[in-house]
Amino acid sequence: MNDNVNCKHYDAENGWCKKRSDWSDPMPYIEYCPKSPCEYAEPIEQPMSDEDIINALGFCFAVGDCEHCAYADKPCQELMADALDIINRQKAEIERLNHIRAELSKENEEQDQAIINALHHMKVVRAEAIKEFAERLKRDITINNTEDGCLIYSIDYGCLIEDIDNLVKEMTEEKE
Image 1 (cartoon, helix red, strand yellow):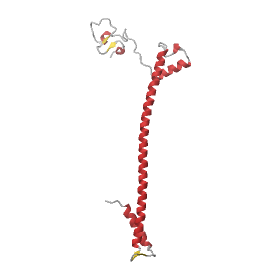
Image 2 (image 1 turned 30 degrees about the horizontal axis):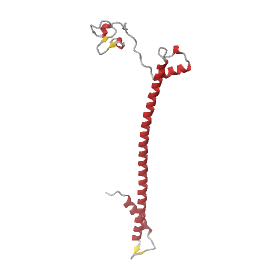
Image 3 (image 1 turned 45 degrees about the vertical axis):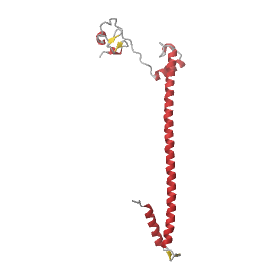
Image 4 (image 1 turned 180 degrees about the horizontal axis):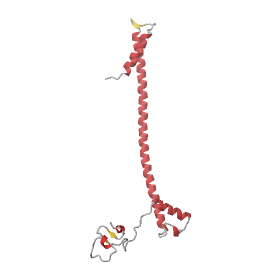
């Protein structure tokens, strides 16, 4: 492929060179521009990168030598307009990122609150389980250490330990 396709005068849609004076015969561009580079070719100006613009602006303020500035062939207002464009794009990007950060922060707060609620619920359930355990332990000890409705003062500690073990087993086994 001919490098002249980058010529700013090449009309890719119609396939011809706009600089050629003979428009009556729209032959393919490559036939009009057999030379490399094309005799009508003018370099296509590539836009400056943000870094190039920032460097040019810094050079302008630090050195003030317009002859050696990257914008030497352009008015200074174009440099300022390009710098303002960078500032506006960066400002928009900051706003976009701040919006994302705020959304993530809101999601984190909601998740934190859900965790706090779950922990509180776990504490409540634990406290209820301890209370239930204590009540059932008192009941079992009373039932197993009573005779004719009267509490026996000489408690069988072997039986007491067995009651505790049975109660723990009963409360910790999963119910089907």
